[in-house]
Length: 612
Image (cartoon, rainbow, N blue to C red; front, side, top):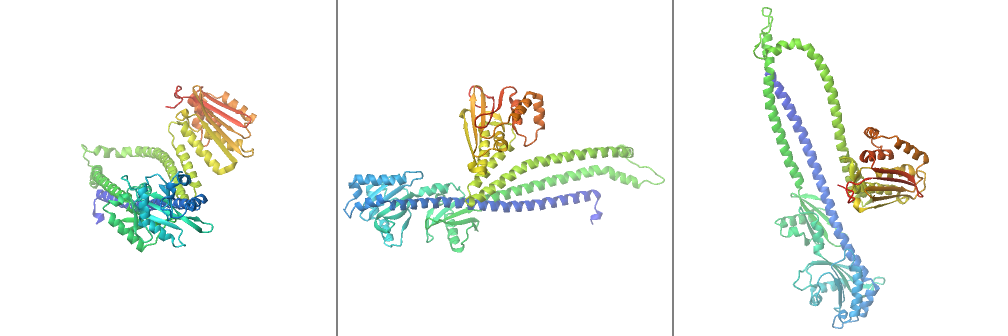
């Protein structure tokens, strides 16, 4: 059947079927691969973010318990409670202001530090009570506390000698019975006693933190992740504020219940269109649960893929219609030529073509064929060379775009993997290297600000610190007014790198580099000092000869012919000459410490010392 089709139909059908099949196959594989990778990355990011939130809260519980234990074992605190005596019928610390002041001072030494707690309370079974707090605490509230079941629960808990620390679930602030906002809190309680001999129990220390502190941490995870906290019995004791009034509250609570009963995995689980992840915290008998809806990123990606597929099909349809019209139009002379050739015979040895139409082209075909062949050969050779060069240029351009992005992604993955294993040095190295690569990849007009150049230098110095550790030191001093001043790129870091290549090569550690950025009249000045072996007299004489014989035209040619990696001292000198002509400073000399490179140029705005 295919053989019976017309020539034009065969061309159109075969070509478009093959193109359509290839496009759909490649598009389908690309879609599935990207969809799978995005889903995997989203799941990993969700776990990392959830672990980070749980770790922050867990660490805070640890600090609360640590503070409670330090206070409970403090000899001065124990002494104050021993001196408070027995049941006097009143609050001992109210009637003894000196003792109260000493107790508050001791508590303040624990609480009013960085990341202090909401309230720290000391009390005993005789209703003696002293505290330090950032929230209102009333006398009537203290009485309510001693009359409450919560105080009785504390006493009952510590009747068992095997109990050492009591975690109080989030509850209303009974110590504040004013009309002001009442914030619920959770707390950690320990007994005040001699922990060396495990006797002399004389009271309790309670470190309180308001639930709103957890709200602030939970808020940082975003609006698409819901957080709850359950006690050891699976009862919800904390709920994300976003979830309290949410219509999905019951649905998500049911998912968490199912997750608790059916899985003990330590990775997010896909359940009914949600990702559910549970995390036990080590410093409290509670568990956090994180719930996130199936990634909207994958849904959006699917939507855009459908749009792209529709666009491809539309383009193919337009191309098909256009191709049919063009092939019919262009093949008409050939059809006429075939019909004319069929009429050629011995009696009629000529083509009978319509001379008023396209017969002129067919008539000239033989005459132009050989000429056209020669021209086609030359044209094809030139076109081949041109297309080859263009393809190489495109490949180099593509490689220059892909390699930095690929390296950036690899550095980001290394940083995440290192962070998961608790290595803080590798993420810092990756971050600095990524910034240096980004700075190098941005071409611009060949200029940057003093701040950007210094950031690049600092990243390089810190990486060298990692390499040489105690064997290398550096210092940077600069004028704040010069931070926005525009300078040529790579005029400081190559000098510092030159110190390691040459100046420090034959000198003993500790190696030192000192950088000073200052303003002198209408110029910016950069001084780079090192404590190496300094410049040799031979090198200084060679550099002076090079500078004396260098013209502006030679500078331009030399810079155009320069290669990557040629950012040495002569290159810096030529670039300063190219940028500032005669209005720049460049000196090489030795001082008592080692080598000194002093460079400078005209300010963009001489009046202010700042850049454009």
